Image (cartoon, rainbow, N blue to C red; front, side, top):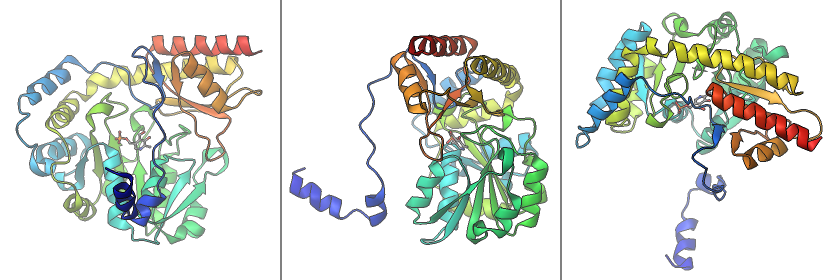
Length: 363
Ligand SMILES: Cc1ncc(COP(=O)(O)O)c(C=O)c1O
């Protein structure tokens, strides 16, 4: 394309598309042996029986997947004590978040998210030309129910609450979530991406309240981030609206089959969840000994304040030079924090010894 043609094509972008930043140039390709602790993936092999389901599904590569994901929705409904019309299946839960924004927001509307929170929500609000209201957590990361009900968030079409929250890892008791849902006449989107690492979850609220949309994913606790499997649970009327707006054949046959198989073999993941919770505790204790201040986490990651002297960007870059990847969120007053995904014991050993080496060589 000549430059004149490119300029002409770019001038036809919608004003929303013009506002979004073009992604920065990619960082150098990752070393396959890097210790990747930056995206809350789950670095464990799938059970053999689940892998076999993927291989069998590949043989059906020439077919479209099932229309409206009927079988997968029925299987999830059965596993989570719901009916199929209360379930939508997504290409990851982020597809479902996107659908919720599309379904409930017109330009100029407001949406509220607990902040710091999952930053993809900010982008979705921007795409839908919505006002993005970031509501700060209460003391000790509690839910500011009064503010959500009567403060500026009152204007929001819906409130997004991740529990456990990303990137803090903190958890709000379900009784507090229920109080908010019961007193609110608005939709509460309860994003439970990390629920399997937490002491409780809000599933029971789905049958009690028609203003809850609950999201789950198999990306974190079921080690299937690359296969894109997510679910939304809610009142049949809300779920039905979202299903009608969904892309044709939104999942692929392999993700679909793996989703079915994971549901059937869910108990096989209990050890994995236990392991991650134990490693989370060990990593937290060891990081504290090295001078980090670690927030209590109920997810598969830790948010840690770095020791004085350097900021989070410095630590992220120093670790990256040693082939260890962690996440850093300069927005929302988190300049002095890094977020570390909990991986295998060997990965956490490598991470801790690298931190310790960096610490001794910089002091
Ligand atoms: C809070 C939260 N919600 C949703 C997602 C999206 O998960 P997925 O699209 O892989 O299901 C993530 C991923 O990091 C997350 O942290």
